[in-house]
Amino acid sequence: MSVILPVAQRGEEVLKIKAATVANGEFNSEWLLQLASAMHATMLERNGVGIAAPQVYISKRLIIVASRPNPRYPDAPEMDAVVMVNPEILAFSQESCLGEEGCLSVPDERGQVERAQAVKVRYYTLQGEVIETTFEGFPARIVQHEVDHLDGILFVERLS
Image 1 (cartoon, rainbow, N blue to C red):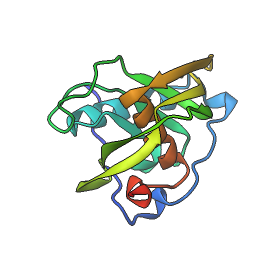
Image 2: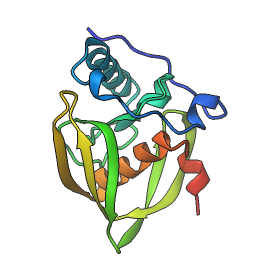
Image 3: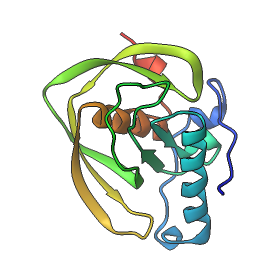
């Protein structure tokens, strides 16, 4: 069973700074694998659909995107969890859409945020393999929300 980590709340410094890149020597390390496992368990425990390392007080560029229906997002599409190390959004679709967002670091507050309908992303797996793929719809929204965390931006700063 994985550890459930504390989640940083709005106003805490770790959520305001740009997260550090995960170094080549950290790929496939025991600490990185354990961090990803604990982040995933924490996200599931709190009914999240994504989580970023800064939210658990680790200022590193690591996110998990895991859309699935739950009490906070009953209409979310089902997808396998994707762990992304050093994710980079390469392209945003011209088409955007407004959608409701919440955040484990901003409990009890939700709002409409305009995001690109699709994003092309390059990231590394925990083992260091490079992946390039496109996400659309709700999963694309999660990617953009979590990458914002890596850059010290909370969704409430993007409310229309």
